[in-house]
Image (cartoon, rainbow, N blue to C red; front, side, top):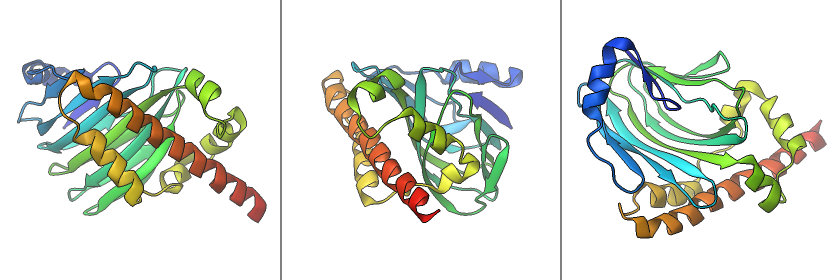
Length: 218
């Protein structure tokens, strides 16, 4: 089994040499091709001019795994969009509350903050297709009328229920696929930034509607 933390790229000690060997390419931001003993595929870090950045992951895990996907910056939020074909065992753990998705296709859209712990774990063979959008809170306050601290705090109190609050519908899929399949060329970073921003706006607009509906039903 290996443990990976995106923020800081922390591996178990025995896995560190394999990770060093896996860093084989840097294009269009930072692109890391993983060592085949760990996973078959790659992930990219895409920085944007508006303060956003995104991790684009597409790989098949060759070992049992535990991947820490938490946010380490208090001034950022992370929007996680998962499309995962699970192996015989697969779990999403949010703040020590776990939901199992063994032998299933997992599609989730949810938000985490600096105090959240999110871990993806399971058995080898899982096919991971993920977009993680890092959103600066200053941008939300300045540019998104649907956002408020009250809305965020109410949402974060939902605990693991957040994993089920939004759904990966066809509109999300189309936008995410455009980010996943953008050409490895700096020219496309501006286009990708617009798509990432649109995904973020859509999430918060839908979230406000759903949270208001929940309050009305109470």
